[in-house]
Length: 395
Image 1: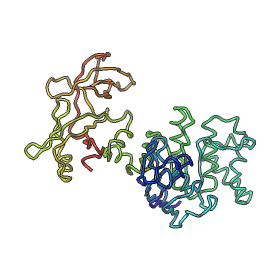
Image 2: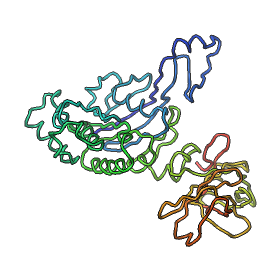
Image 3: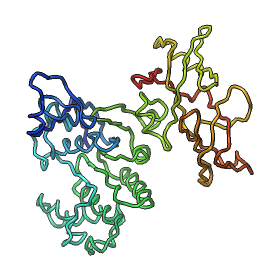
């Protein structure tokens, strides 16, 4: 149980000798390489990271590979030095505190179990290092094994376990000593899809049974949406948005968040935002859509002018509509039957789009490659972004 505060955290890795030689002496301006900023000091892997984590909160850091999420987690763990900024756990500054003295535990992607030890011995190991009495050790190991459902495997060695069972042991070794903060670095990425689903449910149950603050790293936005109290979305070492799963899904602050959160991702179209009789109107591919009243108010609050816009709509918010007139039109490329719904991949005015249609809504109709369909989306579910900055014009 602990609060965690990351204040203006920055991580810079030094430039290589070759990069320094190539750098012009008279050029002090920051550059970019592989989407990361390069300064005189080196490559900025994490830049100005600020986050306040409440006691017992489950925070998920999510983003594409190389965005800095694992580096941030390793700085909390003490496995990476912090270049600038301050890390506090329960109000105590931890920058210079050794990892073993931070009262944290970490679960890695590759399990990191000792192959020559039994499950029980793996669970006992961190307690032995702390010289916990044998009776207390047995009690804590048995409790952790019961919570994770691995009691029957205590006398087996890791090689006799499945991937999911090994990951349970790795989690058990982390929770057995009841750390203040539990760090998890993509713990499910080595499991197949079915096991990932099962382990997600196990982690949710685990969270309900132990009083610990969780910081969880993943590149899988489905994991982020199902596990986190709040999600921290990162890109190129910087935070893009922090919010509950519902907030980042319904109110993405920019096109990156809008495209990253949601599966399949949001569709984007070129459009025009107009002001007619003090009312905003969106024109997109021949369709005219009047944003809902709440969207009108937010656009007016930010004094958004008439302008070119990027219009976003999620696949599940688009509906087929065969009425002629002010509807968008597309040609079917692929139609995927997913059971309760059909995923229709369209080419619409040069843009690739995906529409999710409930199977019942199609009835006996079968969509084939090359078919033309008309579609639209409701005024309350469209999103409007600045095409230059990517910023959501409502927020």
